[in-house]
Image (tube, rainbow, N blue to C red):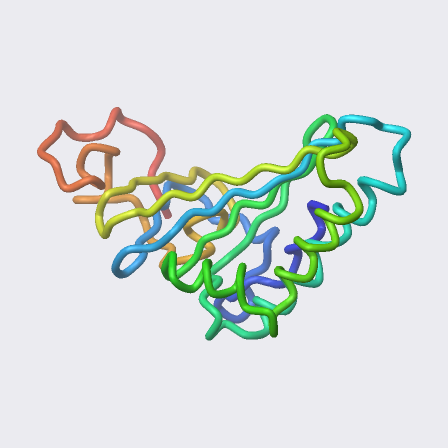
Length: 185
């Protein structure tokens, strides 16, 4: 599943998932946004017929959302972990996320109903999600020697200097200068 997002995010021309940006960077998103984390856990490893359809269901949904940005998905990043997979998504609003989840004309509702019919409460596959409503300016992030990643891929990628130099300053608070580190080219 990690390859899910390779080459599928909205970035400036010439920037790829592997383009390293030397130095320290941060991100900015205009207005409020939503962080939605969704995942699955394989509880019965040998129950392929139960968990494989669940694992395969996410990719077409995300590809559709990335092809139709008006639906509100800003960026998605897939992760694999022992016994499961997760997807961190950044959405323009909770209303966009909820509309996608419940609209019968979109792919999520059908996938959710298939899961309930096929797996239900049999315990072979666990699913989970967490939703965070983030108000404008109520977040901070830093990326050192990284490609555009996470919120920086969802929003504006910018150098972490001046008012963006430290976590405290990125949150709009008074604070000491950063611990001396390397220069951002």
